[in-house]
Amino acid sequence: MKNIPLDQAKDGMKLAQDVKDPAGNLLIKAGTVLNQAGIDRIKTRNVMNITIEEGPSLLTPEQKAQKKLELEAELGAMFADVRSQPLMNALYEAALRYHQAKLG
Image 1 (cartoon, one colour):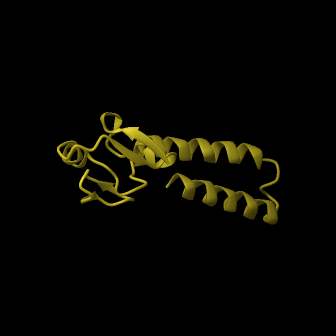
Image 2 (cartoon, rainbow, N blue to C red):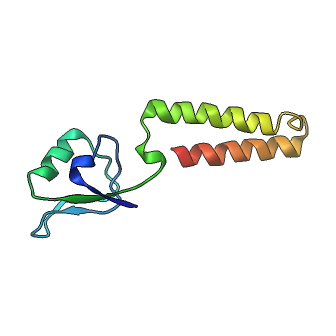
């Protein structure tokens, strides 16, 4: 989690905590992926900071796709000499699934 000033908020950031106005009214729930309309709504309610999730949730879909390709290439290189072995191939596939799931 990372607390940032609202003026640094960008489309695609995911809220780690509920956003409430100074009176305590819920504006947007935790887990929501921000868009410009949501950011603008928060700005009108005198909210100065928000708490976002860090990591892959901040990547654009294009960046995620690129990271997945890079990950597959990196793991492929690591397992290149042993993928013909069933157990090592299963380990490669499990590692690939795990890391791709983390990217979302």
